[in-house]
Image (tube, rainbow, N blue to C red; front, side, top):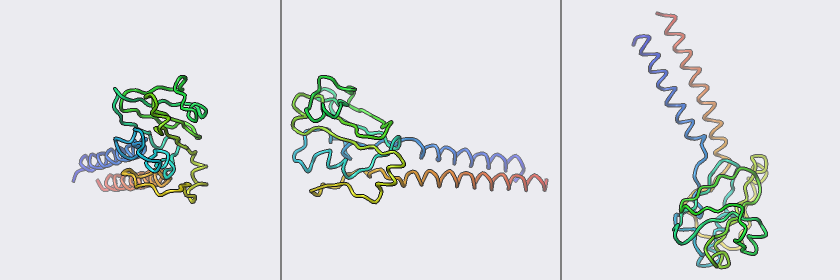
Length: 192
């Protein structure tokens, strides 16, 4: 293979690996409740979205929460803790009514969501999401979420800090690969 072919193939591998790395570094979607029809009045307390959220750990910027719902019948309201407890929908922090709501957690703390449909919140259609910083995530990794009753398994994996270590591993692997490709290109140039 000639020099141009070596440089071209090395560049192609580097570009492909870069795009693979980029796809891992983007925030991924986390379907609320683990399935598309979860944003509804729960059939029982064990079917509550808060049961699902208790089993999950959310890290700032790691996952975007996604709600799928009928836009003609429902909406998602981000509210204060007080409005969450009282199911007050008159002064939400944010209103989402597109049927495919996507929200990224930008800071650690509790996020409160209720249904915008009349009387749905009072019947249990609400959600608390606890978002941790990377520092707090490490502290809680060994702890299990409190859950008095066993909830059914979700169709979606819960986020963990393993994604962070995967990103770090990919960055290191990318650096090693680039170093090897550079070395190979240099060795090929010295023999030309």
